[in-house]
Length: 109
Image (cartoon, rainbow, N blue to C red; front, side, top):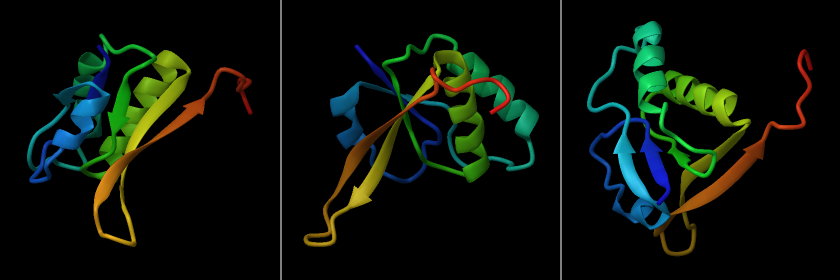
């Protein structure tokens, strides 16, 4: 089964993301945006068991997304993002999957 790594468990309902896999929260509540070294250590440990087929669900502070996505991309040479999108027609939201493949990226470019 795939995992969905949710960067921050806040007041949002993430239950619709369960169709992509098991929900795993990297953080909860308010986070100090300047504690980047702690974020890195915590996210590195939390993503240790991740696979290239798992997902990152964007939530929380931008710096948290940057760090979590960087670790995932470095580890797997790809990034599977779940991004919440609200339809303009009926205001119902859903998750869109976006995949970025870094395998062909050359060092220094």
